[in-house]
Every structure is written in C-alpha cells, then in structure tokens.
Image 1 (spheres, helix red, strand yellow):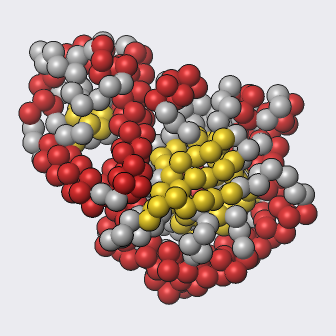
Image 2 (image 1 turned 90 degrees about the vertical axis):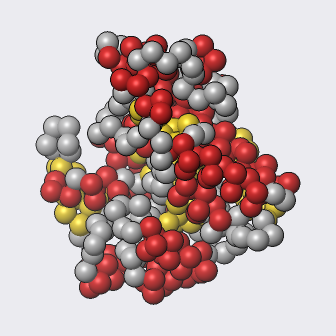
Length: 384
C-alpha cells in the first residue's frame, strides 16, 4: 500500500516536499512522471530513464487494454517485467483518451462504450472492469475511471459529468477494496471551470478516503487564471496528508505554479512529443533545434545541462539529424528534455527542503522566461 510522508513545507507558499512509498521504491516529490503510454517512453530505453533519475513513469490502461491486451501483460508477470522497468508505475484509467476521441465513444451511467481506434471493434468498460484491467496490468498506482469534459463546458453538462465521476469513483473504490493488494487507487477531481463544482468534487472524494487524489479536466485550453482558481478550489478540500496529482500539466512555469499551490505529482507528453519534432526545453527557454539558426552553432543545446546529449553533441549536429530525418535526433532531444524536467523537479524539491524555494523559483523563471522571449540560437515557438 501507498504511504505518503511530508518532509518539508515552504514557509511562504503551499509548496511541499514529500516521499511517496510504493511497492517499487520511494518516489521523492514534487515529481514529474515521463509518459510511457504504451509501456514505453517513446525513443528511450528504461536504462535511459534510470540514468537521468526518473523515479516513476506513467502508462495508460486504455491503450494497453487494446494492445497488447492485459492478459498478455499479466502472463508476463505484470507491467514492470513486461517493459523492463523496476521502479514505480502509474496507470491512467483512460478517461482522457475517451474525451480526446469522443467521436468514437459514448458515456453512459454504467460506464464507457467505445470504439477501438486501432480496428474499429466495440468495447464497454465499467468502473469495476477498469479497476480489474489496471490490476491485471499491475501498476503501483491506478486511477478511478472518470469523465473529462472539454473546455468550455455548459454548467449543466459539467454538473452531470461531475456527479457521474463521483458515482464511478464510489464503484471503483468498492471494487478496489473487495480485492486488496499492493496497488493504490486515486480518485479524480472534476468540475470543469466551476469552482463550486470543483470544491464539491474534492470534498466528496476526500470523504471516500482514497489513498491519493488527482485533479483532472484542466490544462485542456482554459485560461491560466481559471486553471489556478480550480486548483485552489480543489486543494482547499483535499486532505493535506495525501498526495495530489495534476494530470497532464506540462509547461515548466505551470508546474512550478502548481507546486506553489500544493501539488505533488505531474505528467505530460509535452517534453517528449515536442522533442521528437525538434523543439526542446532548456534553462533559457525553448529551443527549436530544427531552426536554421542552429546550423552552424557548435555549442550544446543547454550549456547548463549535463545530459548525454549536451555533453557530446552540438546544436549544429542536432539540426543536421533532424534535417536528415535521422532517428537519433528524436532520441537525443527526448533524453535532453526529460533530463531538464527531472532536474527541475529535483532542484525544486531541494529548495523547499533548504528553505529557499522562493529564491530558486524567481531565479529559475527569470532565466527561463528571459531566454524564451529571445530569438538567438533558434529559440522561439514550438513546431507543430
């Protein structure tokens, strides 16, 4: 079972450093989880993730259920053995995937009816079946099935969705309690951009006494101010002694802002997805290594980074790899960006413990935002 220990709390904000004890090791928080949707972080081997210090990865129950199938993963001894990763794993239930391909799916009171994006086959998944699927997969932390609504959402629809998510949460919790094991189940706060619904959702889930809690349905296009208001509304009702997870938040400045609000866990495809397209994150903002400005630049992607890519290769070489459509470019860029995220979280945690989180935050954001506004060295907008 999951154990969460708070090690230090910032004196000026709600930022906190903790330890999340899982069956596959202790995860130090705040933490960023690289996304390995289909039991792999694209372009990287588990040894790469270990080398950069990743402590936990995220996979997706929806995708693994469809391919290769949970029976195969169970026969392999669970997802840790299947993918060769002996550290912690969290699986998302798949609610967001249903939201993202809504044209293929239908939400009912009993669960989700959906069409496979792979072969068109029809499937049904109840909250109880979703728990069983994630048990077969064998992750350390599993998520209750939820409905994620788009932004903007009519209040009436957001309210119905919020109530349905709570009903599903109770059913998932009952199923999880009937078959105890080493896995821990998180409930997911919903409520769109309505603060009262967010409070109601968080308070109801807190009363169910989940081992941990996630905030879902945000970072889907809403204004930053609304996002911050919704996080505050949820955190006000969630227990301090349990871990809090913001699902899908990816920009460095947004992650830092959510740590200020008391969030412990994060995931997003952004660092690796952008990297595969030639855009990486650095201490001086985003760098588009595909840009012509990098063609004759023999400096590293980030002079402050000690990852394998920055120690050994130049911006000019990286630009060449992408221009030549070589796979190594995506691999090195992904390795660098995840190193940036893992390092950022590690430094943030140390600053909270040492009592200088405010100074660290101001210094980090000053350098990051100043560089991100410039054009030198190929900085600029992400490629699509």
